[in-house]
Amino acid sequence: MLPYVSLQEAQTAIGRPLTTAETLWFNYTANMSDYIIYCHNIPIMFLLDTLVPVFYLVMEHMFPTYVAPYKVQPKIKYSLNDHFKCYLLVARGYLLVVPSLLVSYPTVKMIGIRTSLPLPSSTEIILQLIVYFVIEDYTNYWFHRLFHVKWLYENVHKVHHEYTAPIGFATQHAHWVETLVFGIPSILGPALVPGHMVTFLLWLALRQTEAIENHSGYDFPWTFRKYIPFTAGADYHDYHHYVGGQSQSNFAPVFTYCDYIYGTDKGYRYRKRLLQNKQLKDGSNGGLSCASTSDIKSE
Image (cartoon, rainbow, N blue to C red; front, top):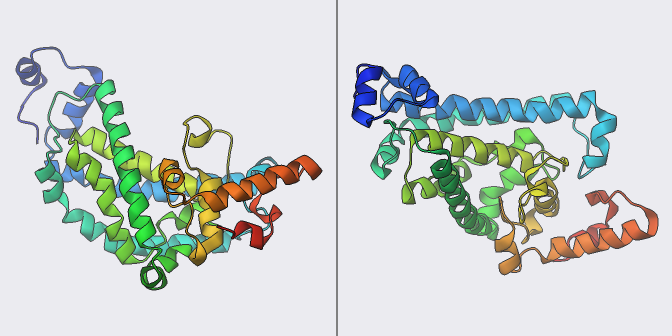
C-alpha cells in the first residue's frame, strides 16, 4: 500500500509533480495492499492464455485463405472441439497454479519487487526486461534439456508433447511438476535484478504472449523473430514438438544462441537447408510436412 494519503503528499515526498502514469498508479493502488497488487498476475495470465490463442483461432477459421501460407504444419488440422478440450485441460490446470501463485507473494516481497512511487522510467523498464529475457532464456534452455532426459520425459514432459503440432491453448498444457519447475527461470531475472511491480507484471505478460506465439502453429510476418535477431518463433519451436520424444534440438524458448552454441539446432538447420533446396527446385511452401520424416529427425 502506498504510504501517501493524497496526491499532494506523494508529490511532496517525491519532490516533483507526478506524471500521468504515476497519477493513474496512485489513484488505482493508493488503498490497495501490495499482496492484492501482486495477485493481478493471476487474471492477467488467465486472460492472456484465453484471449491470445482465440486470436489465432479466429484467424484460422475466419480467414483460412490468408493464414494458410503461414501454417507451419499445414496437414495437421484441429477442430473447434479439439481447441475447446485443450482449453478445458489448461483451465483445470489453473486450479493448481492459482494456489501456488497466491502463496508465492513472500518470495516476490523478499527479492525486492516494489510497488511504491516513483514509477520506473521507460529506459529502466526496457533494460530490465532485456535482462529478464536473457536470464530466463538461458536457464529455461537447461531446464528444458533436463526434461528431455528419458525418465523425466516419459514421466513428466511427455504431457506437453502430446501436441506434435502445437496450438496456442497447448502452451500451458503440461504436467503439474513441469508447470512449477519452469516457474523458476521466470522469477530468477526479477530476483537478481529487482524492479517495480509494473515491470514485473509486464515481464510476465510479455513472456507468456511470446510463449503462446511459439505454440501458435503459425509463422506470421509480424512475429518477434522477424524483427529481433536470434529469436525462436513458431517455426523453430514447432520442429521441437514435431520430433517429440526423440528431440534433442531447439530447446531455446526465446533466443536461439544457446542451441547454436551447444549444437542442439543441427537437425533444424539441416531440415531448413533441405527445404530451401526443395523450394528452389519445385517452389514448395516450406512447411514441416514438405520434408520426409527421416530428414526431419536427423539430428
